Amino acid sequence: MQQADVARPAGSGPLPDLGNTATAFAHKSSKELWRAYWLFRIIGTPWLTNLGSSFTKAALALHLPVKGLVKATVFKQFCGGENIGESLVTARKLAESGVGTILDYSVEGEGDATAMDGTAAEILRTIAAAKGNGAIPFSVFKPSGLIRTDVLARLSAGERLTADEETAWQQGRERVMHIGQAAHDAGVPLLIDAEESWTQAALDKLVVEMMERFNKERAVVYNTAQMYRHDRLAYLRELLQQAKAKGFRVGMKLVRGAYMEMERERAAEKGYPDPIGATKAVVDADYNEALRFCMGHIDRMAVLNATHNEDSTLLLAKLMQEAGIAKNDPRIHFGQLLGMSDNISFNMAAAGYNVVKYVPYGPVRKVLPYLIRRARENTSARGQTGRELALIIAERKRRAQS
Image (cartoon, rainbow, N blue to C red; front, top):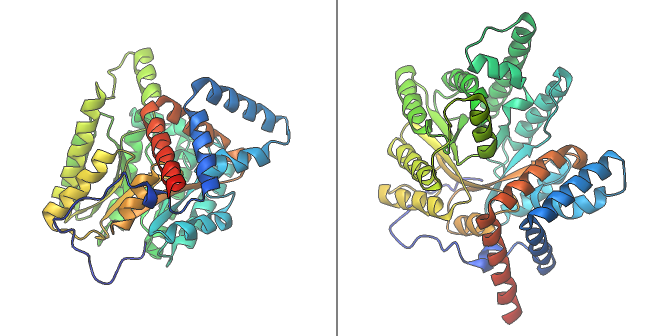
C-alpha cells in the first residue's frame, strides 16, 4: 500500500472492531457472500472436503471438464487468478478498500531444475509488477520451489553433499540471490516463506547472508518464523544479535505455522524430540511474545504480523498505541490470506493500518495441490471455519434487515 505523506499516530483510542461485518464484507456482493457461505459449509465438513478433493484431482488428471467449476468456486475464493494479469484485477479491487496485495505464485511440487528456473522467472515477474505499485507492497517466494528439498535437508543436518547435490545447491542459491538482488534494486520488500523444520536450518543461514547483503539501510529481505516451533523465540533473539554485530536490519514475518501434523509424525517416526509447542496455549504465548520482541526492537526490525488470530492482531495494534507508533509505519504490516479473515483485513485497513492479503495465483491444474492443502487446513481448524461462517451469516442477516 502507498504510505501516506503524513504519519497517522496510533493514539490511545479504541482498537478496531473486528466484528464489524458491514466493513468486513463491503467489497462482496450478496451473491459472492452466498457462494462463500456454502464453500465454508463444505470445507467445515471433513468427509465432503476429502471426497471433493479426491474427485477433483482425479477429474483433472483424466481431463474431465471440471476446471470451470473449480475456478468458479474454491479457486475464486482463495486465488487471485491464473496469471499475474488476472491477479492485478484482484489487487486493484483490494486496493479500493486500502488492502495491499502479495502476488504469491502457488504452483507446488515441481522439483526439477527446468521447473525451478521457470518458477524463479515468474517470481521476478512479480517483483517487476510490484515495482512502483503502491497496491503491491511485497513480493514472496517459497524456497522449495527454487532449491531441492533433499539438498536442504542434508545441509540442515550437517551432512556432506555429493557432487550432484553441491551443483543443485549452488544453482538454487544462485536463483535465490538473483531474486534478492532484483527485489533490492526494485525497492520491493521480499518475503521468504518457511519450510519444514528439517530443511529450515540451511534456509536460515542463507537468509542471514541475504540480509547482510540487502538489508543495510532497511528491511528488504524478510524471513518467516513459524512460532509453533518452540525454538523460534531463541532464533529471533539470536538473529537480532547477528544483525547488531554485522550491521543489518531484520525483516520478519511471523506465522503460527502450517506443518504441525507432519512435524509431529516425522518426529515420532524418527525418534527425535517433537519440535512443536506442547499446547495451543504455549504456541499462542510464544507468538505474542515474538510480537512484543519485534516491537521492542522496531528500531532495527520490520514485522509482518501474518495471522488469522484476532487477539494477536489487536495485541500488535495495542503495542503500537503504547509506543506511539503511527498506524501506517512502513515497518509494520498485518497480513491474511485471500478469502479468509476478511473481518481482520478490511476492518484493520479501514482503521488506517497497513494490511496485505496473500493472493495466490497460477493455472488451476497446477494450483490444485495448494487449494487442497488450504481446504484441508481449514477443515482441521474447525474454529476458523466456524468463525468465517458466523461472520458471513451475521452479514447476510444484517443486509436482509437493512
